[in-house]
Amino acid sequence: MLAAADKLRLWREKPHVFVREVFGVTPDGWQEKVLEAFPTQPRIAMKACAGPGKTALLAWLCWNFFVTRPNPKIAATAISGENLRDNLWTEMAKWQHRAPLLMDQFEWQAERIFLKSSPQTWWMSARRWSKSATADQQGNTMRGLHDDYVMAVLDESGGIPQAVMTTVENIGSSAKEWHIVQAGNPTHLDGPLYMACTKARHLWYVVEITSDPDDPLRTTRVTKEWAQQQIDIYGRDHPWVLVNIMGKFPPASFNALIGPDEVNAVLGKHVPKAHYMHAAKTIGTDVGRMGDDPSIIFPRQGMATWKPIELRNVDGNFGAGKLAAMWNQHPGGGEADGVFIDGTGGWAASWVDALSLLGRTPIQVQFSGKPNDPKYFNKRAEIWFEMCEAIKQGRLYLPNVPEIVAELTTPQYTFKGDRLLIEEKDQVKLRLGRSPNYADALATTYAQPVHVQPVLPVWMQRQAAQVQTEYDPFSSERV
Image (tube, rainbow, N blue to C red; front, side, top):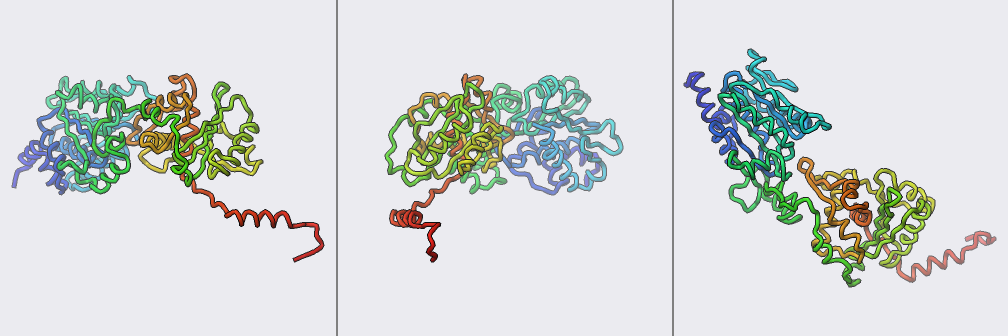
């Protein structure tokens, strides 16, 4: 049996042995690769799909460094304080509880983990910054990490500001041994993970993890069936699929939802009635928020749309009257099956109140509300992506309204964590010069499915009309 010093030396040189013997688990292939590289690679970056076990690996590396180096100092951070608390810090506790050695020797606390016999010199600390922090304040989060054996850990580094990494790079200035380990989803085209995988790749040991069903080296922690399902639904080039399934950065133009050529391809084109006649008739409405912003009433039936109504400087009664008129007589024929209105911020309240007096209750869409699909950050992102995908796939044609081309192609998207987020309306207005009300109105028609209202046969309609006409409430006769 190896003496304690020999065992520590073995674990230091072979972290994968440490994981097997201390935690009783067998690492995945890509995890084994990182564990073997750790002793000799000061900079390790893991560019990962969603769910391969990267946070567990970070915890293993931290515990290995903690146990096998004298008086180590480890600082850990993440994209947010909540993320650090719920992921890496919780993972540290999980693996500690699976190892009697770690439970006996180390103390886990909400902000700090330390060797019980040397709490001042042998520690790991959780580093956070406030949501309102400046770049300098974010960078200061990782200051003060100096000693012979130091390690910095960045979880979900795809969205961590570059200012944090700039500070972290200083830890190697006087240390005998130092390590910077980062892991995250490739959600941003800037920041520490992007730099490590592109411009500074020669300085980093980069490991790429994918759940692509066609890749023989894929992680097995994500099922092939689920990964293939996402590809079938959204396509291999969809940004969410690229990031979360393929583990790849989106293309350089990733922040544009749709291009002008794709919009112009369906602009002003005739759609045969047979292609949409059985679809639900809907109306999307966006009420102008400021004096210079128009209110838009946008009719749609399946893949067909008609020229929207634009109203400026009207009160709620007038706007509601116009909407009610189209509700009663949709351009597709007959009454609309579903009417949506952007209810965000209460701007449409006067319209909704006026419609209620007319016996009409529209479906209010809260852009900041919860999406049906968790891959989107909010309802606005979900309905915009669905609308743009319909245009790209030729499932939605647009009326010849030039304003809508710029409105559709100007908004940008990014990721918040691993969820897609659309640029705020006010930000779009600053760059576009006007509010994207045409596009927002049309997008509301994708807020939820609408069923076609049943139409009574002609003979039943006539019979109903006859009954209503022949009934005399003042007649002395009773049935």
